[in-house]
Length: 292
Length: 347
Ligand SMILES: Nc1ncnc2c1ncn2[C@@H]1O[C@H](COP(=O)(O)OP(=O)(O)OP(=O)(O)O)[C@@H](O)[C@H]1O
Ligand SMILES: [Mg+2]
Image 1 (tube, rainbow over the protein chains, first blue to last red):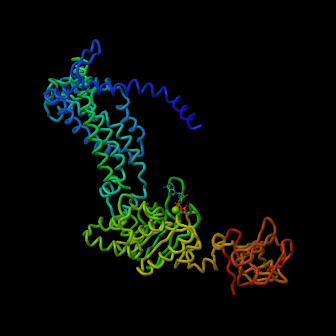
Image 2: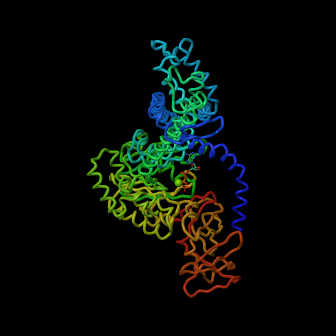
Image 3: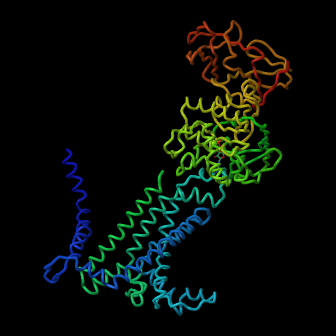
């Protein structure tokens, strides 16, 4: 009976498992192996030698270092601002009663719109001569900024776009979190003499901790993997003179541009390791902090 | 602190939750707000706390008008129906929270919190989180948190409704003990009449947002001023008999007449089950059911539309189907108009 049930369950799962196996598991294992290909003939699929050469190459490659640096700057630029901003907007949306559904939808639109379409609109917004961004800055007497064509401003432009794009998702999750906090806690806190700010610090934030933790992990992972936005925003480039080159973009370049599968796989695994370590650290911290 | 409610009303959209309520709650007393579900008890309490602003009328603490004062500034303590303990704080942090919000030094706050925890006998649980406490323990923490700032007013919203029967009994005595030890003006919301009658100095009985009677518990039971009060209080419930007033005389179904100052009308006579007794004369009824209620025996008599209940005396026995005569003494009967208002019989 047990065996029969298991067999039946396996039969149902088989189509899904097959797809996951072919498109997820196999590439993962293959690329892991590929990262150790030291001498490889890809026309005939023969490996002459395995080794750490690809990792040593990355260790010495200035471009890879730049990609790592850019990725960290991107993560640091996007994640905190995105979280604070979306929490703030979620609090506002939670407190208004009229039109709140409408605003929720408005904020969620960027999330469901194609990255390419969004990025094309932002290319126009960031345009140095005709863009609306410079027009607004001009109203405050700020000189036009070369958002997409200068090496200093390419990364900020990318960060602004990504924050804006991620907002909707974070807001929806924060709103869901806020709705689980019972009114009675706020009432109790008011009776205990807590003003608006104290109620935020001592009731909202601690009760929202699991939500914030979830959003932080998702945001960090997503930000480490940024690629589409760059590709579309800079028209298939990684920004002027690689100023917006991130690790995934580096992997893409190595793979499709230079056909260097070994180095591309090795870089992908370095990124995987970084994300893995970050996530472990966060789980460790949350275990200590979120305890109820 | 004396609390005065002056004509307060609370309207939500279309429903009037509290309607023109006026009452004075004397200093240092424990007053229960009693009434059926949805009658506006919690709403009244929330207005006292400042969590709702009344849509009409005013609230005075001593002689100070606090109607527009926010809860933060009213300096009251409150225990919520679900306790609302902060789940991320330990018991000690929960009790210290009101002190922390009022900028008390940490060492001093801790000392006070521990003192309060001792008073409600939870000082061995200080490091636990609320989720690791039983219902009764959570309630004590909630009381300690409400009392730690030594407020002059304590509000409790059905604090015992989540507890089992036995714990309710001990906890209500506990609340009474603490209230009397601290001489703190306390308003206690409940829909359990036995609870209200047993621990209160005064009971405020409400129905549909209106004040029905504000009185000491014994008067509520013995001298209800309205048929609603008579019916609501007491278990088993009040017995009613139809009667007529003709030319200043109340013709009772028990075979005697009483002089009464009221116009001619049909009225209802109310008699408590313990005041109705078997006799050789009076009203003739058929016994329908005999049941044991604790140490007493209860007989249900009458027909389907008008059942009456009475307690049998020691040694009395009746059979189902037997015809009996019941009687009530004239000082135990209460007379109500058809509209519900009481008609007093003069001596
Ligand atoms: N926030 C609100 N919005 C609209 N109507 C409300 C609100 N709060 C209470 N009411 C209504 O006001 C009336 C009184 O409610 P209240 O909560 O004071 O009753 P209660 O006496 O405490 O009842 P219970 O014993 O069930 O707790 C009810 O009819 C209720 O539906
Ligand atoms: Mg209530």
